[in-house]
Image (cartoon, rainbow, N blue to C red; front, side, top):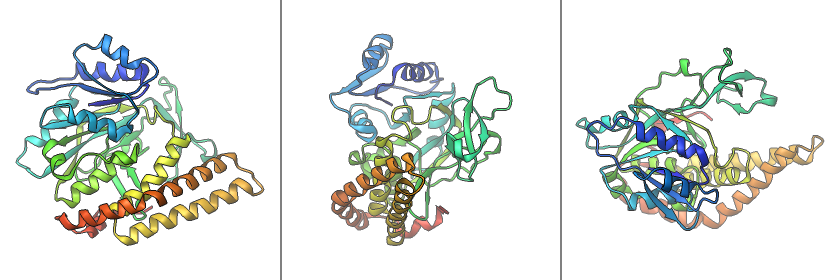
Length: 345
């Protein structure tokens, strides 16, 4: 399943790769949910890919809402998710489905190996396009640059002590990556989910609109006693944040708001408190940079996004606390299980 929003030729590349993927022994239905694209990509899909089932939404439902619409209008025991700006390798479909063939009835989801497109070179942080968790800055270079290295996007989802969801292996050079098959959560950009698991824990939270939907669903799967695995052989190559941009207000507001709300819904109270404290302290630092001697315009944009996000958190928090109590009543696993998976900020 692919959710498209103004995907242009990137979604065409994605569909070309899915159609070319090895489906030996598999009954595959390719579904594209179009989130009210304005660039004509929905018409392009309809005309160029007659074998693909196109489901149109009259409004942009966000990632979670788009996936849910596709789930409700599709069939099959597994729901396989691929980002519209990603290309899958030939054996992707068989590799992402293969772990479910083992005798593991509580395997709820399998997450793929997602690599960033292109090549990268290490660069000073001040001018870096991307910054990794270990503090290295990276910039994208030409594919032909022999000094460039290939970087990872994700080998699954992880959670920090303040509730920050992130991609495991983010920006690690490909040759340095050797992740374990055990992982806290799946990445919605490349994953397979058992439909019976969704019947048990529910679909994606459409209120989040975009970002953290996979983290939230991973939390709920874990609390219900479902397992999540990483499949190294299921590989995709991904243009990161092609539809929204990591510096846009859309990205910043949704990311900040959803981190706090997902923590409030799922995390132990200590982690919830740390999530809120981290956000407030971060806002103070941004205000100092934005309106102090440096007059940092980027900090000013982030500060405004943070204020907007916190206002939305305040409005939505009662519903998420209600969800928290409801999940506790039916959970098979105590909330403090996350201590087994938590990484440092």
